[in-house]
Image (cartoon, rainbow, N blue to C red; front, side):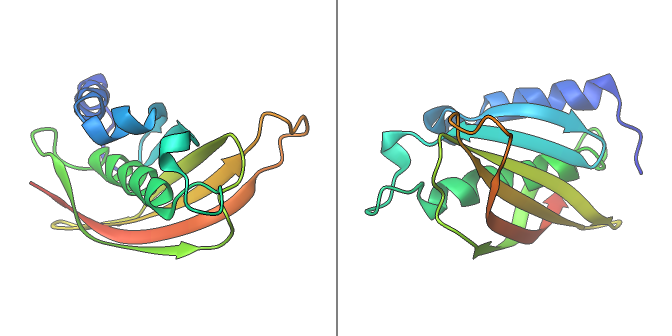
Length: 144
C-alpha cells in the first residue's frame, strides 16, 4: 500500500470539490483512507427515474468517483485519476433518502488500478441502521 500523506488527502479533496457533477448531485466526500473512499449523496428530485427511485446514473456517478478516489490514494502524488472502464450491476431500486458509495482498491499495479464500489441506499426512517445494497461496480483507473 502506498503511503497516504496529508498532501494526497488534500489533493483528493480539492479534486472532488472541482467536480461540478458531484456538486449538482449534492454529494459529499464523507470518508477517505488508504485504498478507500466513501461518497454520500441525497436522492434529490432531480436524480429520480420514472418509478420514483434514485436513477442508475446517480449510483454510477458516485460509485465511479468513490472508486476513482480510492485509486488516487495509491497513485503518485503528482498524478490525477481517470476511469478507463467501469461496469455496474444494479441490484435493487435505489429507494431511501441517500446513497452511500464505498469505493476500494482491489489491486494497484504499476500502470493501472483495479477498483470496486458498492452503493447502498439508506433512509432517515430506519433507526436500526439497515442499508440496502443497490449497486456493485468494478473498473479500471489510470493515473494521468
